[in-house]
Every structure is written in C-alpha cells, then in structure tokens.
Image 1 (cartoon, one colour):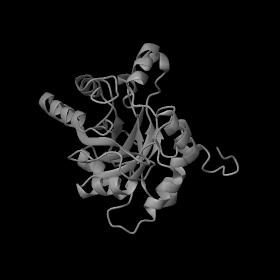
Image 2: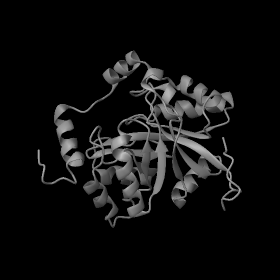
Image 3: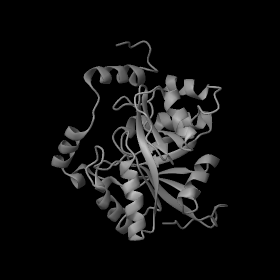
Image 4: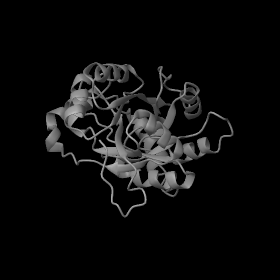
Length: 266
C-alpha cells in the first residue's frame, strides 16, 4: 500500500509502494505454503509487491503469481530465486527460468542478466550464512564484461544474519552507487514484511524501474519476536534448511568474519 509523506519533503507528492523481495516458501526451506503467504500478504501485510525467492527454485514464485491473479489480489508477484553460487548467494529478480546453481558469481550474474533479470546481493559479508565476501563482490564490480555487474544490495535483512551484514552492505552500496533493498528473508509466515523496499509507484514494473534508477529505499518493517514464531517451528525449519556443512562454515567464517582482520588467521 502507498504511504503518506511529509509535505515538507520535496518528494511529498510522490506515491511510494512497499515490497518484500526476499521471501521463502515451503516449496523450499520455508515453513509457510504459497496459499498461506498469498493470504497473509493480501489480508495483513502492507505490501504492494512481493518476490518468492526459494533457493535455486522458481516454482513457488510462479505458483504465487498465478494464485494472486486467480484471487484478484491487490499486490503483484515478481518471479525470483535465491541462487546458491560457489561464492555465496545471489537474488535473481524478474527471472523467467531456473538459474543453474553452484556456478561462480560471475557466471550466475551473467545468466540472470541474459534472461532480463536483476541481481541483488542478499546478506553480503555475513559469516552466519552463505554470503558473498567483500573481496569477491569487489571483483565482480571491477569486471569489464557487459553482463557482469550488480543491480542492488540488500542493506536491511530482517534476520539475525542481517545484524552482521547490514552495516557492511550499506557501506558497499554507497561505495558503488547501487540500489538498496530491504528484505525479510522470511522463512516463517509471521516474518513476511519485517523488512521492506520502498519505491516510487505501486507496481512490479515501478519497482523494477526504481531498482534500475537506484531510487529504492530499504526500511525496517514490523518487528517479529521469536515467541511470535514458536520454538518448535524454528527447530523444524532448521532441520528442513540446507544449512552449511562444517567445512562450509569454516570457509565462510574465513571469507567474511576475518576478512577485515588479516592478523587473526584461522
């Protein structure tokens, strides 16, 4: 839904929509099915656009878009996926087909762009999950290849992972002039909309334009407490999740936690 703005703000006459472009469903390792997510967004969430971004899978996105259309919902659905690369995760938004997993960052980004999608880095430089490191992201930004570049970076991730990555992401965004996004990274229904992306307009196409023009704003949404979700649900989700192996955890720790601390090797 659009927001009311302060009339003293020069952008006060601009209507802003809200999007959550990082949501996981039960098609992947999320706990809510597509019907539940669609109903929740329609009835309770103050959102104009959503993206279902299951790991290496776009089926949930298509199901959500079809169901929202069938029900005549007021919000739009962007086809998306969170791609597992050899060097961290990448959100592919506005894609139409599955992106191959376990490729290099460059090959993954190129594959997303070649099908007209946009590339956003989720929870970058976080050592708690599979995240692209600063060194690897700088390498991408230095590429001279026409399809190898980033469109945006997730500067607000509503999970505990974001407590580590958000500040680093904001600095990287400013350094490279990228679009910023806010995403719930919701694996539970109650968390949908807990971080959002504000953009001029209301539609999915307006959001795409805003990302390309770097005019989006990352914002916090409603705070979700662990008690709102329930301990059993959290345990069930962790069992379902494709978590890092112990070796992967060590590699990720080396890449991100110690990246700016070369005098503390592991």
